[in-house]
Image (cartoon, rainbow, N blue to C red; front, side, top):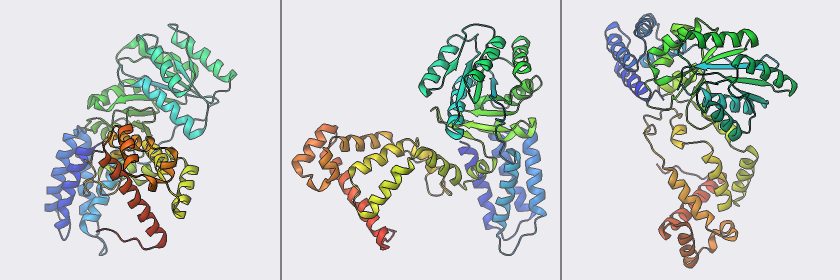
Length: 435
């Protein structure tokens, strides 16, 4: 996510660290590279021009305090301008209705149907609510079946009437939601071109009837500069309340995110960060700006961990660690919880200074974790609780049962003992860092 852009910006800003003060000459050199980085990321040229002018004006007019280095002042200016470009403050969903009605619109192939499932899951987890999905894409073959499959996967009900009139379907769905006390109604509309008058009129008719609290435009972040035309086309017909950018985890330049709010005044409310159904995140302009500049995003990382990890289970494990009773069954339980966080390299990228620490390009093979699980699962419950009884014959049996080598079994046991020793030293305050 914005990795190429982030690297380019960080390299440009790094040049100013050698300067004793900020001058027009050294600012010109740095801002020239920032301009190129933004243009290569497909940021609209008008946005780039205004961004660079603002940075230069503020940097040259800034009174640098003695306690601050020129580079620190410059980084803050760039970060603040990025935050402003991305929308300033985070914009929350309007969920005041009873039920709250959210309508998702967008082009064909933007990922709308998958996104509506992700959004329903997000709302249920965050607000502990009861969402209802409504199938109104009556034109695309298998669209209704796709939504029903997503609903089944998430255990979220889907209201559908087959290939009927979308306006009537929505009207009936709202009545059904009120009768059955659903908190949120999420309407999956058909994908369309923003120049298709008939289909756009259909959206207008749906909204005129339901007065949706949220009309969210789903945009493929790989669309590039044309995304602005798409947004303006939809916004001219519908009162868009926000946008959801999909596929930001892919090989995307990210320019649409940096241009969207500034050119259209439509706030980004969510971003798609993975293909998994929990791969939808609220959009925080400040967090995104710090992530782009290599400052990390610890708040998002903590929220993700708190959302996924079982707090009670973690507390039990912590107590066992303190008492020195941590065994391989506990270790296996922790591995299963860590797997819920998704690819670990994505978490590592959220750490401050990830690029300097060489963590941005690190790849963790999921098979390595699967191999550890296989080895532990090939042990008997007694062996997992008491690894000290694992002698040669038992290790050979475990290696054969897991399809791994005896060397891998020994390596796992050694690492486990080292971890236990480290935890014991931490408890006693005797731990020394090995560097």
